[in-house]
Length: 306
Image (cartoon, rainbow, N blue to C red; front, top):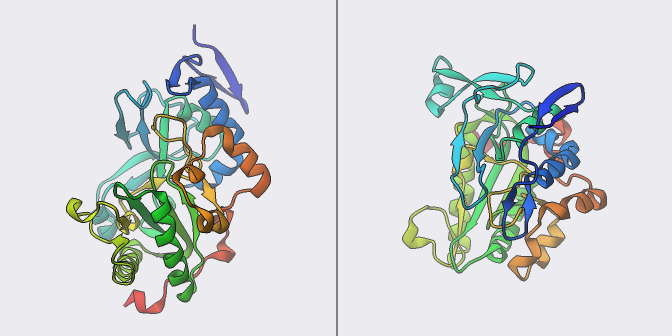
C-alpha cells in the first residue's frame, strides 16, 4: 500500500521509496525525495512562477526517459498551472496556441513532482510575461575529449566579456558535463537576448579558436567547447539550478563560485552529488540568489537591441 504523507496540509501518496534509482551508488527514490525536501528553499526560488518541463526517468538513468510539458493525468487540483505558449512563433504572435503547464511554487507541489522521478527544466521567463527573458544563459558544452575544465577556461573569458557590457555572470554546473553562465536582466524580448548571446558566442570563437565553437556541427566539436546561445529562445528550457540529473550517479546542477571555476584543474572538482548540496548551501547560501533579485537586473546592452 502506498504511504500517504502530509506536506504543509496537502496529502501526498509517495510511492516506491525503497526503489534504487541510481544503481552505481544505490541511491533510492526515498533519498531523492529527501534531497528535494532539504533543498526546497533554494530550488523553489528558481522554479517559482516559471512553467516546468519534466525529463522523467522513472526506472533510473538506464531506463526509459521522456520529456513532458503537458499536465500529467491525475495532477492534484491544488498544483498550480498556467497557460503558456509552446513555440517561439506563439510568443511572437501572442495569439498562438497556449497550453497548460505545471508551475511549482510550493513544497507540496515540489514533492508531488519529485515523486514522478524527474529532472526540472525551466525557461528564462516568468508565466506572467512569456517571451520576456529576465535572465540570459550561455550553455557551455564540451565535446570529447574536452571536459568541464575547458568549459571553465571559456567561462572566464565570457565572464569578463559580459562584465564589459555591464552584465554580472553567475556560474553553475549543468549536472551533466558542462557549465552554465547566467546573468539577471531587465525583462527583454527573448529574440533580442538570443541575438546578443549569439554575438558573444561568435566573439568567443574568434578570440579562442582553439577552444570554442558557436555552431552545433558535430565535426567541429571534438576537443572544444560549444557555446550554446539558443537556450535563450522563448521555447527553450535549461536545467533548473539544484535539479538532479539522469546520470549514473545523482549529480546536481550546482551553483559554483568564480574561485572554483578559476581553480578547476580536473573534471572531478566540479562534480557534485545530492549529498554535497546541503553542506554547500550552509557554507555559501544560494550563489544564484541574485538572479531573482530585481535590483540586480541590468538592461541588455543598447547595441544588442538594434
